[in-house]
Length: 372
Image (tube, rainbow, N blue to C red; front, top):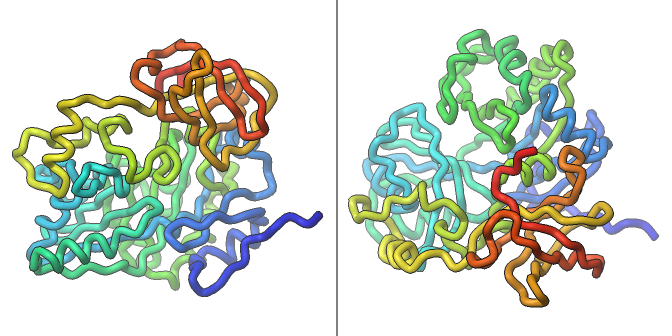
């Protein structure tokens, strides 16, 4: 039987790197923010994992769309959209920030880039935030322009990323601090380069705002990367789970709040900052989380793909659910992320995992990030 394929249309956007990733043998795509995201290049996920940990990869993450706020009230709107205090943010800062609704439910967890006192990019996860921003601005009569700019991020990830980036952008790139950005020149065009990315292996994200330069940029990095064993890549599920990196839509949705997602440290709760959902989040924090995101290690053969939540049980009582799972070659066992009831969330608590294939595996809770 032939495997089902995703049929594309104009509603699913390509990226300006598409020809390059297809020439390198992309084997599959997902869709994020109505845009394709490469998900593999013919290697096994374990081969990709070890390469990412040891060398350097180029990722087409053009699906990482930007919501741009610009104008006299841009800073006010940016603060209304997140519980994180932005008052001390400086131009050149990147800030990981939860976004919540009026009930404290998670809407997104973008990285906010401050380009100017009245100019911000919200680099969003997979959820439509542009209309939320427009709705707030219109409802409150704010003077701000809200657009999705023509920006196509590319990630350079892995321990050799500094060397590769320095070969293309110059030694200045090494001075960029963690979650900071600088404007660097490429072919006479300024490009925003940030030390950030969706892995724990170190690296950069290049926010390309001129799609004509997409292929020249990819070629320059690829050619310079030959000295560093460069390969095409994508976010790696093994590395993501081990590192405790959350995925909006998987580990958390609008049904969850920052407190139970372990993001309370990114929330200003003393009332000194005004934002949508403040009172709800204060109440949630005072009451305390009833569940939290934890790691889970569990036995048995390599687990199947997790396409729906799996039950986590103790003595036949459901205490949570697995949202992402994979075999880890470094831990030599199955690993997972899941939302677990607080009373059962202590590390080393014994649990049972009901996998998608019907098997029941013994396991235990562990802290994040996972350490060997």
